[in-house]
Image (cartoon, rainbow, N blue to C red; front, side, top):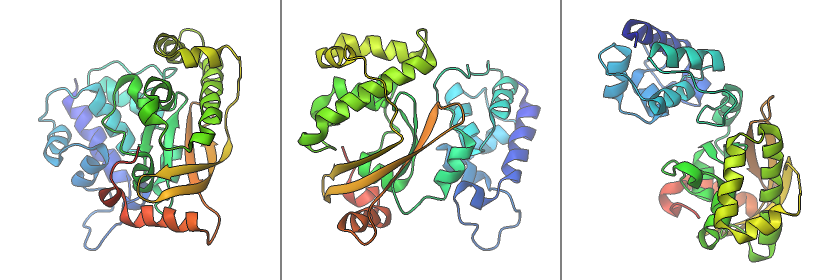
Length: 282
């Protein structure tokens, strides 16, 4: 671990970012144009004291999870992310694997979406980051680990809880769409990938998945019109639009509703009130 290089790298990239770059308000009386240490710590979901020790070269070697969070908070490119890992004494992550890294271009768009649910997901349906309205609608997912982070895994492994967000009349369509998307992911990622591992795990835990997988459906959803059920707001009819990264490995999902509709009012209520009042969703 090169503490001096890590210190200089973190400090420089923190200074290069403006609050608006990461969806924060600048506020009055800022003595420097870059982010404050406490703002980076907030974005990376770590304590300000720990981040300060990292930047000052007083910390022990950070974990891969910490470095992943810092790469996301500082909006690092893949090359910059790899360099961060190496100066911290760890091997750079495999770029072909789906992990915690989030494309900076998608993050920049997400940072500007505060009035409607929006989230960035992996090919395997893992929520990598979401804004407050999305957390209020879909539930807070940052505590999930392993395959539990994948929506397609939860759909088949825990149907009694994972499907409550959708009306019963639409669950068959959604299940088939989940399987078709996973097969498309397998085609892109290959037979020796996490997609293949997920297929094997689902075949082990869900006879329903085995039946649907045998149908050989392949489809990636770029847009969808559906109804979601919030535990307190009830049914919300939304349009879902998708923006993919160039390599197709991550997608930004944006939910919206027809102008001046009841659904639009409910989405605005999610945006204003957030997760504190309405709980964690499904």
